[in-house]
Length: 381
Image (tube, rainbow, N blue to C red; front, side, top):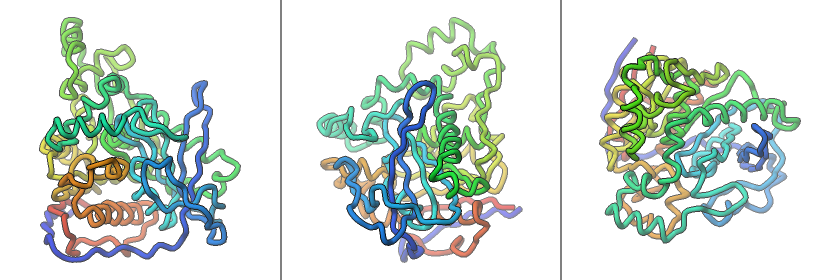
């Protein structure tokens, strides 16, 4: 095993692999527990099918062609799990980029979706977002609780999220169109914030609530009155489905995991020591002190191969171009030089999935100069 700490220069240029396919996008409704689970799917499309671009309900800009025919062949599959209160297409720039480079990317609207929805509409107005941003002095990282107070309860009973991702895998592999176009041995998962927690759970992290002495009735009643993420990992163990046992959501079909600023605090004791896939943690240093602390312990507990990347002047919501296109957002520091910051997410995600889903090291760098890449911690076999 080798362990490296690499400090990269803040000047230089990106290497971005050449795209080799036009991107198509489709939506599917999966029959799940008696209702339709809406899914958005990006994929490499046939060149001859390049017609009108999909407008993403006028919420975000992209380059995908709606309902284009899928390029033939077997493609790796990457699942994306969105952040609390976001939606399937919160990070269009990343999904489309992976599809350009040969991946099928699928993302459901989880039950807590609010900022956007497949089919259109938003539960959060531009006025609400602007007001919250101003109140927090531009710190979107601390705005989640205020924007989505009616969604916080989902953090205390989160099983639906990994279960929905596994259901999407089941549905796509059984789908008459996509089933024959997906390589079932090359499946990865990535997620942001609550979606990062979801990705960790699918990779093997556990909810360990066996120590019932820590969750006496009086303790649980006191915790129930608090509305802060700091206590949610303890609230979980007060819930009947979890109390007194270990809950697992590992999906063995998943071979590689990326967690963007994950909500690892949702796991009692961080739950990270049972991660069973190569994993990359990615976060930023802008308004993310808590997330840095939140990532360091899971990284230390996780066995290699593992990676921890900290991006400079990148905040919790920088990964969401859906937020970038809201009025006034480009003025926030975490969105300055946005093209280059997006390229960091794109390049490292592609390199990681190429390495661990396709056994391809051709674009996996350790010493390239990358603007905004503050530090990288690596532990490989």
